[in-house]
Length: 545
Image (cartoon, rainbow, N blue to C red):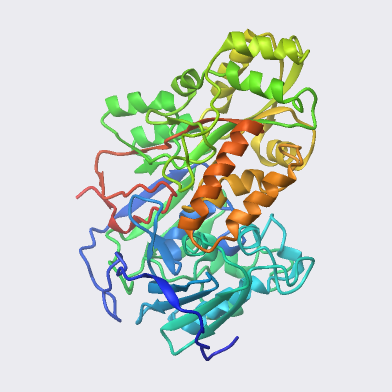
């Protein structure tokens, strides 16, 4: 790891000058107005592990956001990037050089200084992940975003070049190719800063099993407002307030995160006071909870639910059949029957708040008669289609999969298609079948955006050939690769609008809605700030008096 910064020759044009909204309590932290007590929150599952660099699931990230912080956060209540551990930054005109100025006086929970050396330690750690953990099962986000490592099959292909320091509070990241979403991506928990001391002491052999190292189960160490206390597998994760936090000290003493798989059971737990809050509340439970005096909050939609179509399965390879399926769907009915209030009907595979969204796309209005005509023209009327859907799961974009499936099945059968239902347990069966094999036809899936970037939606879905959709469209793949490599969001926007138009005409899937995930809280909970990208840090939460 280099210790001396090399100043870039390129002019530094774009900059963020806003101060971090977390506030700076000085080197010794600030007492704040801690209210004490315990905040108990229920998610749909327990974390996979507590080292966010090797995680890709929302429940791990929910806990990680309390313990860890990145260089960049998000503006409260939005998906837009904002200063966090980096209080400002500049970007060179060619989009290859990023200079960050760091907050000073910040310490990790083990007393290690957060500084430029620690930043480079983390970047170099990700870049040098051993080959055994470079797969999507482990280093998912780093692999997808940076697209290469120091060694292994993709050695030399990635966009990361180097991290260098200039004193304790300045660090420079050099990329090999532009990535306009780089700053926004740094808000991901997978790219949060972790204590070099703790990693070196407790990481063990990360190539063997990252899920079971002492670090990822007993000693996760960040700079955040809560510190790790314990993880009782199958029961709860317990965190305590970080009284030496560099920003505004949390108000509660303790946080407990519990797992309740069933959506109805989560709602019941809130109503009976067994937990203070819960995520992914089913649409049918919202009104009863409100009637009982509970608080309901909805995140701004930053999701998409779609009906996928595997073109390796005939007749889904026929565009007329795909168009017919699109015309057969009454999206309003699907949303009313199975999605939370506030969900938005989709015409793109990204919500309207993401740059590149456009209303200038081919739309397939609900038209059963046109659907029937297209099926007849394709010789596919009366065809039996396998329809895969998951069980035992609630996702932000799909809170009630069986309900969504039943509405869609009725609509498709109404235009003359025969539907063969195939239900599988979400993980690993359903995901493995739909995303990792050709053994599926129609299927329900979706996405919760990780950060505010067009590539995080359409690039994830359609940027390369996949088993999920089963098509090879080089023109589309090349266009998405070109868009991702443009240095600025402003320059990218027209191309992403064009890509959204191309995708709509090609119909690889049908975007149905942008669901607004719902949370529920007891009547005595205050200060919870929702986030469209789930960047919900619980510093300001209080319970009771």
